[in-house]
Length: 484
Image (cartoon, rainbow, N blue to C red; front, top):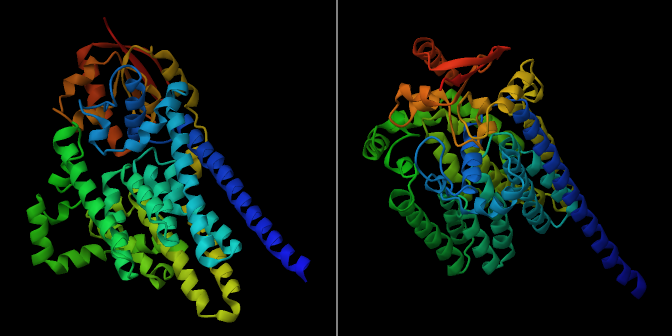
């Protein structure tokens, strides 16, 4: 009896170790898979790269004496959002000087976030099988998986720390929770609206005061400090997000007008929140969590601020599943779903494990079905003009300034000065004549987004000015060099 009793825990621990190893294999596989997709997409010039170029230009020029400049206006990248986490990649970028290294960093941060989420699921469900299924659900969840190929943004760099904060919060480890939560906020000041809700959640759970007070106080104070930095400490564009109404223009032209609309026209606000576009968004967002699971737990309160912001916003970008506005929302809904599964399985005490496993597998399946919300196969195929685009990049000297199309922009991020025609016409002093001051200009007829229309004005100016000569033109792409 004694030998049998002692053998059982050893066998059980080996099973847990095996499950942990499987989870890490899945994380590594997902990292390589999704980074491979990102590499394929941008190697084939199949996506806009403006946001990607902002980060790549900042990193490249930091190594040449400018600290994180923004390519199109004289401000600092950290003045747009104080993302201190990205500074950790600078030594790696010094060795791997390519925007692909930043995409790899992003993929690592996204996939490693599945580890604390898996640990949380294993801790709460007391079973490695549903925990593994939920870990895979996290890796393929549409609002998370899509961010591997959606250029680069700040939110994802706080995701692993936010997931660790959840894990330590539920495990009762206050010190590790506090550190994880603070690190999450260092990635982007807006993460504070999520971390503040830990205090509300702690209150609902009737936790001791420190679990309530610290998240609320730190989040509010850090947001205030970040806002001060954005408005008067670091030159950037971040302050305008809070002094203007960029995402709420349907409600007013100033914060005061927006608030007046909320108070005086509640019917208009409700119609906006539940418009057909928003309802379609909700159908897609909640599909991988089986629509109801997050709402079976009080943990859903942590997701509510981001959900409310996305629904209220009049900017449709907030309700596009594969854009970065939904990554924190999706991840917090996933966490709430873990507790939803726990609650649902407790309704069937005789089949608790089977119910938990079935729900987790169903989530994994629907998350993979949700791949169709962001994956476009054509983005990863070589086009007929591939060789011409490569020729353009190879022809432009490293010391030349370049005006090009957005699909090319990140590929020139190591040049001293870069831009697009739409950027000049839409930002700064909006002076069209500046387009003619660049050493090289690329006219890309294969770029068919709305911003590509700005090339028409540039083409007309080039016809009249005589400032540039054609180096070559093929496959609907022309490279022009400024006449000295």
